[in-house]
Image 1 (cartoon, rainbow, N blue to C red):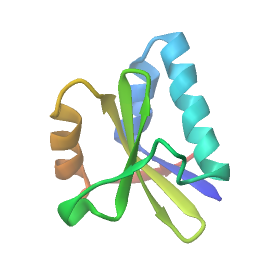
Image 2 (cartoon, rainbow, N blue to C red):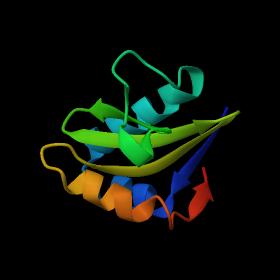
Image 3 (cartoon, rainbow, N blue to C red):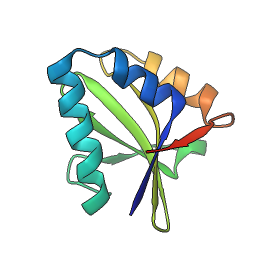
Image 4 (cartoon, rainbow, N blue to C red):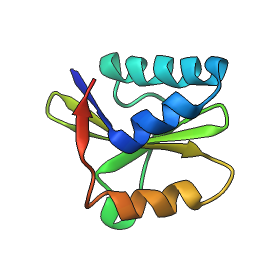
Length: 98
């Protein structure tokens, strides 16, 4: 499977501290071999084609289409801001190949 990271997700990961950035990167790489891990949840409503996984105190939102996993957004999981950003970005995401 191919991984595509949005600019917003890439930017967020670059700003995160070393250990946490490594944990996020490992989880994203694991999605290549298993895009639907046990801790993934399907989002509801209009975003139902998207999933999210938790990585420590962060959420990773992504979509699986054929052989491509698109990581749309990574954000802190303790508030709803990551989902507000997600809803704004799903229509304007510009994806960058990893």
